[in-house]
Image (cartoon, rainbow, N blue to C red; front, side, top):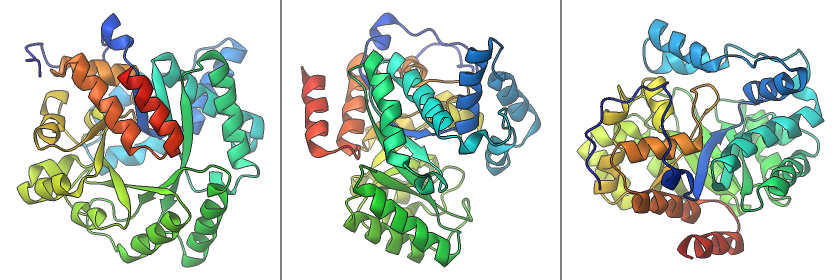
Length: 344
């Protein structure tokens, strides 16, 4: 690991991406759909106008709002798109295409996009997703994409049952996995419904990941008991508790590290204080991810450049890509081909 002697990194500043880092194959396993920010970019290009300035928005959030849950709650406060645009199927393809294009342009060979609960109920959901992937692959043949659905487990039992049924049905059409999200998020939640949901999803062949440890150490241990769990999103607070860090290391799960999101939303005070080095030192597999890249003014290429600025060598960055591919929910044959290409 290289030694970092650079000045502190600006969470919303421009980052010089060295050509060596730009050329590395990348993977992003934790990418939320951000439908309105992406669609706004699409419509702005079509209309010849500037898109909404999310960098300035993020600076205001950091200046005005205490770090943690309060900042997280502001993510959905602005939708710079016309009323009714969410329901338009062609717009859906366009905003997914925009998200995949941004990743592919940065050298991503695999991208997993997370969709909210409404999307799995959208008519033709998986066919529309594959159309967006097809359009991007026409320009970037190396990229592959998978779809995940976020199960928000504070829903009524009736709605949760309906969503699970929709997910298991979509699995037959290529849905790759589910992401467990819950309330309360920063204090201990009730996990039994999540365990049952995970069992049902795994029986349908879906991969399982969960958000945990973003703003407190609550729920980390419970998340690690989720049946068939293979990944955890964020987990930054697990690094503050030696017992949790050991549990995480022994679990074998991969941590989806979202450097910029964690700094902008206040999960950590700075890039330099992010626990990614502690994870690596404890043998915990790490994947670099972008989370909500439009709203926190980043890209997956910028996340790799930031990790390089924090001292990780190009070889270590490629190992993060390998970790991501191994932990991905893409089919085994595709996973093997991606890993073979990485080794080549």
